[in-house]
Structures are given as C-alpha cells and as structure tokens.
Length: 384
Image 1: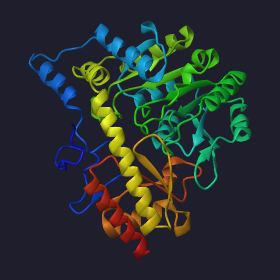
Image 2 (image 1 turned 90 degrees about the horizontal axis):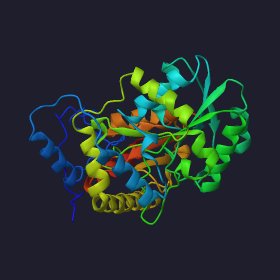
Image 3 (image 1 turned 90 degrees about the vertical axis):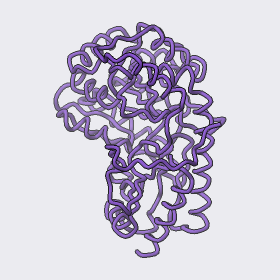
Image 4 (image 1 turned 120 degrees about the horizontal axis):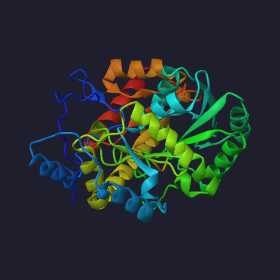
C-alpha cells in the first residue's frame, strides 16, 4: 500500500542529514529518507485550512491518542494526569538533568549509549558515569556488577536508560528492566527511560515499557515517548513525558515550564494524534521494510565484507557494526570512509565506552540507496 522504494531528493530542503557534498551519501543521523504516512500529512493540510497559527493547547484527543496506543500495542495503562507535553525528548532530558539534579552530580549511562545524552549531561554541569555493557561478539548484556558499582556512587542521582537501546538495537527483557529498577530504588537513583525508538521493531517482536514492569519502576521513573522516530517527525519537536509519581511529576512539570518547552506548536499535537490513531498500517509496513533492509545488510556483510560484523538488534533502524577486525579506531575509520567514498556514517566512539571499533549506520532508506551505501563501504574497506 505504501511505497518505501521511492527516492525522494532531500537536498536543498534545510535537512541537517543532507547538508553534504554532491557526491556524498548520508547514513548517519537518525531520521528516515521515507515520507511520513499520508494520514499524517493530511492532518497537516487540514490544519493549514485555518490561516492563524497562534499559541496552541492540547485537545483531549492528544491524551487519548497516547493512552490508547500504549495500552493497545504495549500493554501499558497510563492516566491522563500523568502525561505532559514536551517539545522533544532531548530538550526534556536536558531540562530534567538541569532541574532535578545538582551541579557535579553523576548521571549513569549503560554504554555504548546515545551520543546526545553525553552532551545533555556535560553541557549542564553534570558528570557522565559510564557502566559499560558486556559484549560477547554477537550482542550485549548488562554487567550488573559494573552497574551496581555505578549506582552506588553517592553522587549518582539519575540514570538514563534507552529502552530499546540506542545504538545497539537491543530490546531489554522484562527481568533486566526489573533489576535496573530495583537497583535504582536501592541507591535512590531516579530513572529516565527514553522509549522514543520503541515502535521501530522487528515484526512479531515487542518491547517492554519500563514503567509497566513493577510498582517500583513505575513510581521511580520518567518515561519519554513520541511519534517522532517511528513516523519520521523529528523536526516537529513533539513528545510526551509519562510520570506517575506525583512528587517527581511536580518537579518535572516545573522544570519544562521554566525552560519554556511545555507548549506545543501548531502542528505538534495534530502529528501525534494522527500518527497514533491512523498510522498503524503504515508503521507495520515500515517495520517489515526496515527488517528486510537489515537482512540485506547481514547477507551482504557475510558474503562481501566478512571483516565487518553486524551486531543484530531487533529495534531501531540504526545498525551497530563491529569493525574490530579492521584494527582502525572508529573516528579515523569513518573519516576515511567518507573521504574515499562519500559514505557518511557515525563513529562508534561518540557513543562512549565500547564504541572505539564500531560504526553506526542508518538504514531507513530505499533499498537502492542502501545497496549504494554498502558498495561504498565495501570499496572503502578494500582501500584500507
């Protein structure tokens, strides 16, 4: 029903991703080269019929859209009063760090981890405390001895969890989330669970919302959710925070209001409502397409580039590539690949401990574009 093979020229559209040289192919930043669902753009056209774009408020349908989606597809029942709008997950995380922790506090991350969280922490005068995950050559698991040592640090006040994990694509099991929750309560560390990638998953797989696991998790967590990654709407700056604990919620609300990120723009609410009420069919086709792209990459690497190993993850459209066999650190490797072939991928070292010999690659693109990228990667490796 939907055409994900169509190439859309995004050059000269003020796209950060496509602000590149003519011969370059960007497969780095996490936005897709697919148009969002037609059902969502129709909602924008409907809004455009009214020519005044003043301050906006949230309709009941906004709350209902989030509540019904998470109950139906993720088994999490949310109360309306526990939800609040925020202009993006990264601004929310920065605001939470700034107002719910103290200068020089340590923020715990399971690493490798999303690069912008390092910026959120350091730019706000806090310190990163990395709990490096165990990598067994094919996937990742949590080293609980390392994690507990980090959480027991007396200056650790907050932990940010990517659920599912970015950049590895790991979907955490319920028992992992439960154990994280128990440790955080034991050491009085509040959890921020970034669940923005939760709807980009392998067909027939499911993620577990952090707050759904136990009463401990629910009462000691701030969950960040949004339609932006799943429906390619990042530029609209629309997200929601789910905070069941009244005391934490009071502080979070005060934080985002103080930082002026609690009001929606004229299209933010319409995007979420249309995505979560009319976008399911599009999302299912997207997930099938992304899964097929992953299979293409896996087969290509096995046959053409055995020096690079795909770390399989059942979530996100971001691939984590193990380039250890090339014996070149990721920043140097990514720079050489871009210089020699025009392929632009992310160096794994931006994601902290454990990323030194890895690359992150965005495969949310038409398959012809993906194959172009893989051939460029092959050429780059052969030139090393």
